[in-house]
Image (cartoon, rainbow, N blue to C red; front, side, top):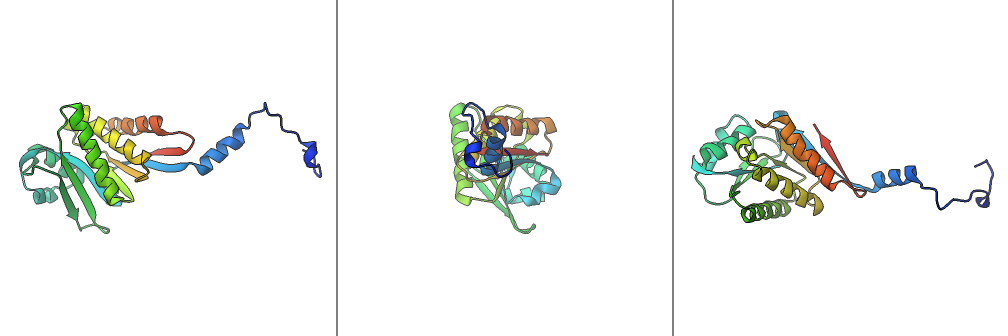
Length: 200
């Protein structure tokens, strides 16, 4: 368009797509969520960590003797803890404090997994933390059912707009295993009104 032209000098062809402008608009107005692959140095950035446990011999407070967060979650599975229901632990060492929420791991059938997913979503919604992290012991993740629960929980939290920052602790899991969970969620959920970043 030449300088000084009037509005009648530029006629928009309705058959011409405006791809560039539409892309910019979508990115500017889209809701932004992120999934970050977390390493030990990232543990304190997350307020609420979620995992599962098996019944065993440890008391919940003994888990705090673990040298790392991934080891804590591992001990919650092997040898397991002496509990029969959900467990909430608070760690005042970091600032701000960190909270760990553990659920029993009934993953044998679809109904159990659906109930566990619903319980985890409900707990996070009640806390409404700025960020939430997940780690299931590799022994459970190898079964596939734990991956299903983790993915479904994050998916529901994103869709319900409960939280926008998620951490997946690498721990003892293979990097590719954790990254694939994040990338599958990105592929399933990303659309014009939602940008899902995967950071690693």
